[in-house]
Image 1 (cartoon, rainbow, N blue to C red):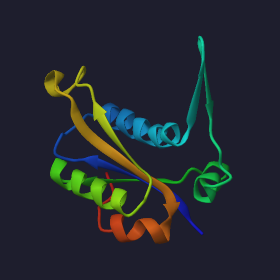
Image 2: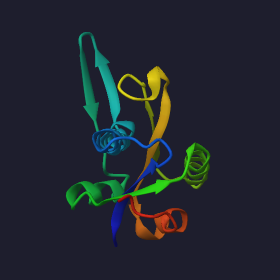
Image 3: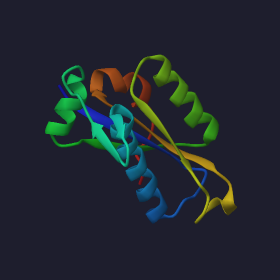
Length: 133
């Protein structure tokens, strides 16, 4: 079974290559941090990740971390996909940039990460989107 993560970038923002790389990295990391639990103890925070109940995440972490980066034309398309996969029960994280280096100080939805999940679960929602080049 192929386990992969799909990162979906907004094409209309015309972000620089470095910005796209940073946003994609944020998205890939957000999926992991969203799956973790945090335990606060005075001045420390203990993060933990229980993989016993999440075989797709476990296989992905123990494998090759397959990621595929695609794009959508605009924010409406990004939001539409986000809500569809969320409703389907797939793991998804939205990245909102603070606007400090681009976007004129305006917080902006830049991308989402979906998965990791099996290709069978992801492809019905993501197969139609073109690869980012």
